[in-house]
Length: 92
Image (cartoon, rainbow, N blue to C red):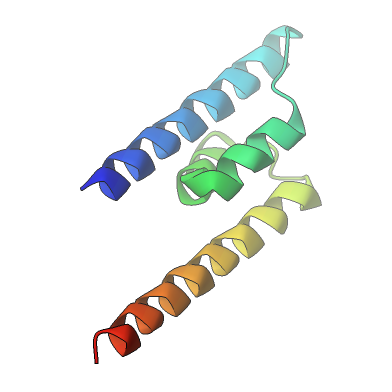
């Protein structure tokens, strides 16, 4: 349950930061650092960030994001699969 709450919170943060950065880019205002956006993605907000970026067309021309975030998602999926397999083998 705690994991689910964390994932919802980090995903919401990813959406908010992406939308803020898009709005700031339009207004020539203070922007979110790319490393901050990537860090939020790495800590669990990657899927929400990618979907938001595609929906509002933000940073879709940046290979760092359009290649990097899908790679983060794949790495996270591999970690989850590995952890799940380890928990199954530990229970036998």
